Length: 186
Image 1: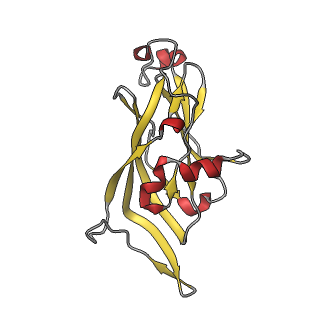
Image 2 (image 1 turned 60 degrees about the vertical axis):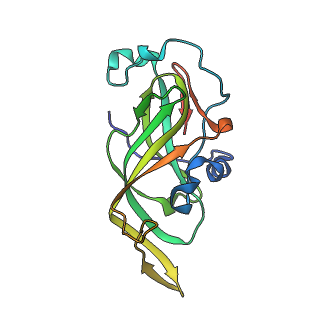
């Protein structure tokens, strides 16, 4: 499946929801959009009937559009490779939603959301996930005294980051509810 990057414009309230979502903890500037509505179990077919690896079961799946948004910050450029993005259901099942690594410059998304992938997933309530970022070839610049300076991203101990996995927790009111045959936005 080929997932071209597309820009999503005109989604009212998306930036505000993005600022309040669980990814705000990622590097103090990332945020994501919670999607779906309600928090109860999803009615419909048994989620086992949908196997994202088996195209013959796609009719039993739902679709998740994953978009990335950047909160306004001091970065002139924040380009990293997003290696993996997984979602976890309320009962602990995990689903990989990113078919391949993609390079993202988060500073391009201050006033909009970039569609990163669309994935067929089992109907369920998704409550958390993980995002894996690869900093080995990152391009990160900040402004210091009017001059662009390259930044080095480090962990809490000051060690430069290579690849890191961050946990995404979706608040109860922003859980991602995916139903059969429908599209949800994260």
